Amino acid sequence: MFAIEVNFLTERYVATAHHNRNQPEWPPHPARLFSALVATWADADDPNHQEREALEWLESQPPPAICASDAVARSVVTHFVPVNDARVLSYGSRVEKIENLLLELEEAEATGNTKKINSLHKKIEKQRDVANVTSGAGKTPTRNAVDLLPPGWISIPNHVRTGQARAYPSVTPLTPRVTYIWDTEDGTDKASIIDGLCARLSRLGHSSSLVSCRTNQDPPTPNYTPGAGTDLMRGVRSGQLATLEKEYAKHQASKPRNLPFAAVRYQTKEKASGTHILSGDTRGEWIIFGFRPRSRMLPSTRSVEIATALRGAIFSYADDPIPEGLSGHRPDGSPSANPHVAFLPLPWVGHEHADGRVMGVAINVPHAVDDASRRATLRAIGKWEETCESLFLQLGPKGRIEMERIIGPAQLVSLRLGIWNRPSRRWVSVTPIALPTHPGKLNKGTAAARSKAWARAETSISRSCLHVGLPEPIVVSASLSPLVAGSRPAPAFPAFRQQKDVRRLVHAEVIFDQEIRGPLVLGAGRYLGLGLMRPIPERKPEDE
Image 1 (cartoon, helix red, strand yellow):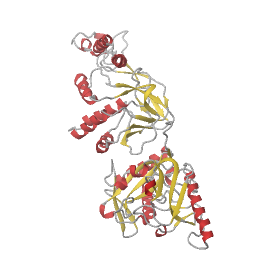
Image 2: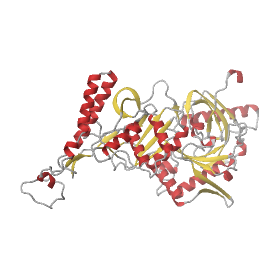
Image 3: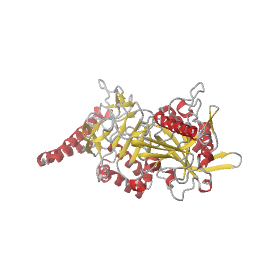
Image 4: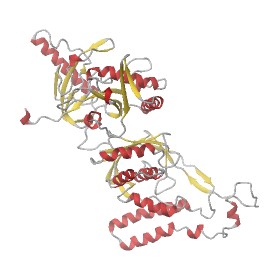
């Protein structure tokens, strides 16, 4: 799966619909995003050949699914702007006519109506031919020529200066973010290249629609899917980049032009039916930092210490007041009851040679976090990177971890989101779960007392699954010993205190009756690196 996430920095999107220039377009059509990426590539002093290949790969993919919230359209106000020639006042209507004709052409090509195809081609060329309007120097009427001059230069009785009527329809999305999702598995080598293009993309649609754009390793569930639907959007097809280059050679950004596209129908849905995969409220965006080689020496038993240092670093660059979704506390200082940002050390586990060393950390911003908290988190990270030449965490007087933010696919397996979020019925803890309630003595007392304590521990783990919005697991097995290669025993971790109480730490395996999509983090310490779960393939009968 490959995804591109676009965030609207002004919280509004300005672009005209392809069939009506007084109506806004929402969500932004895939062809518009692709053209913006192409323009970003072409604006470079020396356009990169690898980036061109990545764009050609992207145009060859099937139409993407889209995740976009509802949007409120603003009232359209007509503005009058100076024009290069007062006789070319039909620019907007020409573009609209061309795009409507292109839609008709798409339908005609689908039915194979040769006569209509030829007729539409002629109509399109006629609309594109403005030579008879723009040529013929010296033939512009005097009164129209006056329109080219600034107001007040020449006064002609009974003359009202004309201007090009322009409308700038816009929408305010409820969530200022759109994600495009391609169902492909072969784009790993292209993702980092396209991510670099996305990082340079500054606007989408009108020049006032400023955006921040990056690839997304854990996209949300789409609500627009290509298929038999009623929403018609402009998509791309193989050869789109070459077509854009040919069109540019004709208009040179100064003549009437239209966006080449392939018409794609989309259907809107709230949730996928049948194959919908559940996920907990801890699922969200991961911002990953990899430790430099000489800093990959700390064991996972220091996870809470590392997470606390990372949390402190982010808080030191966050603007006051720190919102609840980032701080994890209400304004009165009490713990938040809602999902909030988590800080998760990522150890090397799951391989026969894994030794549990922490390879990096992830800042987990759950999808349920409000946009103000998400923006506060991203701003704090940005200030941190802008202020420090190299990022580091200080653990006491001698402990220093040097690190860098991972952009694009990570080389180390432990830092790849796909390792932690793939769907599975079976999950095991990598770092022990801090039980919300104390179960009693697990390894002391009579056999009956220990049995009851272990049963209470497993019940507490089941409730932790319910607490993050998941169904109750059908199997819960608690243990003090590690359950995955490279993990450390629960008693090896320092005591975890929360609200003056010491939380009991245990490892666990949980199995659900259906697949669950991660990332999954359970227990009282889930915001500071404890209870990190890893999906494990289910045991086959012959493995028992």
